[in-house]
Amino acid sequence: MLQVLTETWEARRARTEILEQRHPFAAELLRLFAALLPIQEEAFLDARTAPPAPGRIAAHVAERVVPRIVDATTGAGPERLAEEIADCLDRSSAQAIVAGWMFGDEQAPAERYLARAALSPVLEALGPDAAPAFHSRRDPRHCPRCGGPPQLSCFKLAADDLASGGRVLVCAMCHAEWGHPRMTCAGCGEKSGSRLPVYSELGTAAGERGGVVRGLGIPGKTDALFPHIRIEACETCRRYMLNIDLAADAQAVPLVDELSALPLDLYAREIGFTKITPNLMGF
View 1 (spheres, rainbow, N blue to C red):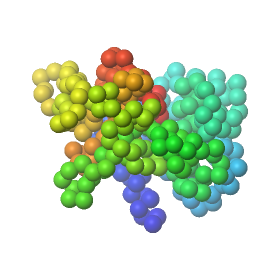
View 2: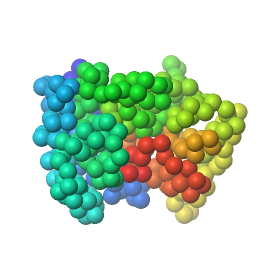
View 3: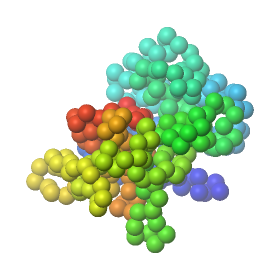
View 4: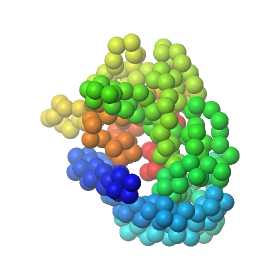
């Protein structure tokens, strides 16, 4: 079991390194993410070995993880982010910031970043044991484990590894996955295909509506930058999320690949959609 858990973190590290080289426009964010990963892995393993009680999660994270996230961000992140985090900690305690993210409070971007970076590995380690700490939302659009919002969607590999399988949503808070119908908005529940456009560099599949995303590539190259990622939008709530298709790229690590897809986020924003949940880096 420990080997499997270690492989999860190794896969994230390896994919981050690959995408940092592949996508220079995302290199700064990916370098920061790479600096966070060893801290998050240690926090994960620590929580597996000595799990905090549900009522102590925010205090545990504030005491044992937040200071190291602050140090890593100061060393590897943008100067402005480090300054904003320092300002946040001057105004509020680390425990209050973590608890605010846990319970869905309105937060400044730097507060959300700090809370997410520190809390997610602990929740990931605790799994279902963390559930008593949350007042979970009981609907298909929120995580059945912690009630968190979805970060992204993913097409899993089918049994024959040649085609896309079922669609899952990935929790922004604890990274748990749960099944969700393909033709249903993860933001508002809209089910009409005519209201659910899809945008990608490769266009749409049969029965879908949407458009081709153009102009993302490097000048002189025609290959798609993100052949395995698409924008799933909704014209009812005007929100979107990114989808990672593991049949199109079995080496993808959804949490990492989503961070690297800045041009798709910018495109979605330009055509009037707002992301259901901005990622760890705020995009």
